[in-house]
Length: 284
Image 1: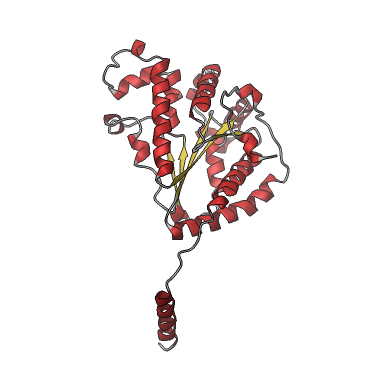
Image 2: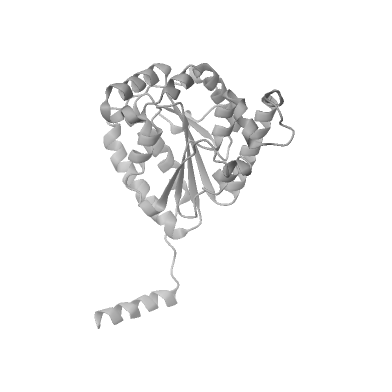
């Protein structure tokens, strides 16, 4: 299938996107592509012109953590930074909502992965608008001051933020891991049944699950309003983890290959110096 088919449409209804796609060879194919990604990142690091920001969003248990582990397993540890954004700290709340994301952006030559992202500020806060009050924003004194226009404006700000990043050398990828409610139920049960996964289970997961329809609505609006030409959303079927990981890796590889990253070219004088240094070492 054409990988462009995974891009979000202008008006997203998640009911129109499959949550299950199975490729029985996905795990084997991923082993090949992740090595290619590692090589590409190495060249990108040497060239030192671009950085890559990979944004992962999805319902609880959609497989974000394991995707990071499996897709980027071969990338040099110095070439990838992973950030997982939880509830804002008191220090973070003393700044605007994008501040903590901005300071976590990847340096040139690196992959940066946001496991949960700046979009939490128009997802979780839209389902639980009371969280906005903790930001102490001028003219927001009560929950009744937080309407749809507030979130539309915030999404426009996020679009501008990403446009600024792209224009200054950051390549932005955004993946929504599209999980079905049925598969989430199965994964939560596995967390209860498997001793080694008990630590991942939280009663809060069940409370949030009851708000599934509200989150779905928030995601659909967010995907529709923030999928842009310069930073499109990709909606990835997430019920089968191996296939989801492969699709993300394929989209990354296909798009990053277009940049034709190159190792720096040495001047003739630098090449001559290398010959001299080699001779020095041989005669040492």
